[in-house]
Length: 91
Image (tube, rainbow, N blue to C red; front, side):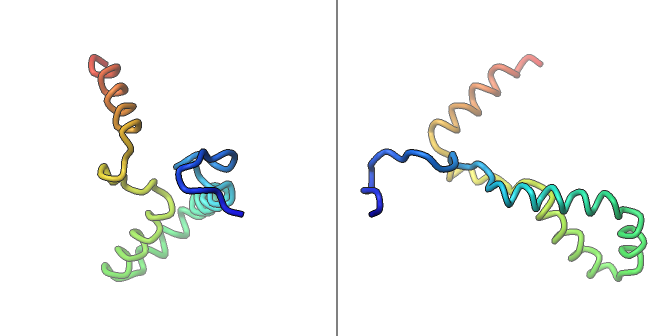
């Protein structure tokens, strides 16, 4: 039986937290890239400009966090950002 819409949710991951498997795959991919930087650099140099750009962009998607869409942030998240910015304004 599914939970009723609007009822409190108990258990599970918190909103925005990474799936453990996703985090493990991401870490493994980063290690693979780090361990093969020289070979990757050589391979990149052998590619044409367009192919090199496509490969770099596709690898970057797996190594960098996704962009945040401000329209999808909750009021609480926006307040946290504002608080952080105010606290770190002087630094």
